[in-house]
Image 1 (cartoon, one colour):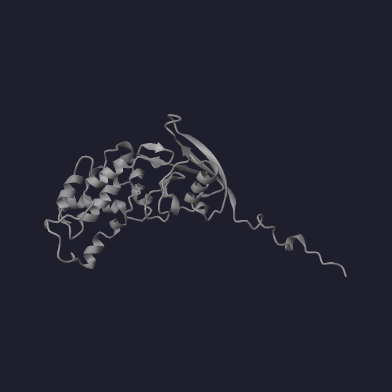
Image 2 (cartoon, rainbow, N blue to C red; image 1 turned 90 degrees about the vertical axis):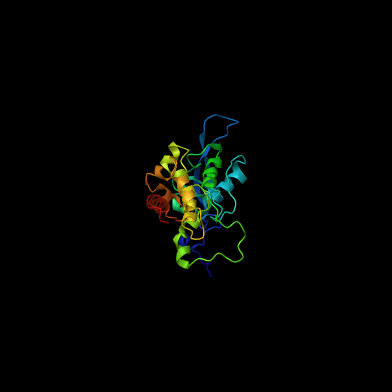
Length: 257
């Protein structure tokens, strides 16, 4: 009896080829090393990678397998620490939350540091000006009672809802470094600092709202905002940043908060 022959179209694909989930993706990374050159350059890396992976996974692959000198920040890798904010295809994003398949991977994917802050090396920027603005708005609960409370400071669900949105900030600087005003004037407090001031200004348990409002009433404060909505678009946590800034402006005018 003749041995049956499987038609080519019916044959199972060879492992590692037609059934492979991997595609070839080019990552175009902006490189800068002040010990080597004064100017930044672009460098391409080609990877075989699953498009369902994240940009952070690709950066790990580049660093671990192709170029150990590539420098970037990351920590939790789950969109909570905010340390891996960078510009990906021209938009501020968290590398750990950005899937390769969502970036048109048939074209080179560009990766560069966030704008408005001094680049230290490759994708790492100096975050100190950003955190100084954050510290300046006193992002902590302040009460007139100097003694520790003997019971929990209670507030209603409605009071808590008033500032719920701005408690979501993870200090990634994506909003601040997307702001054209911040790009042109590093003295501007920036959206993230205002968001964190908002979180306490509208907290019914806090008693330093007036003080924070006066800090933001400075020439480099809330009035520098031009309402471009870049900050709201850039926030990986979905915070309505521009709305929060508008509410702080309104509180400055009405002194009601």
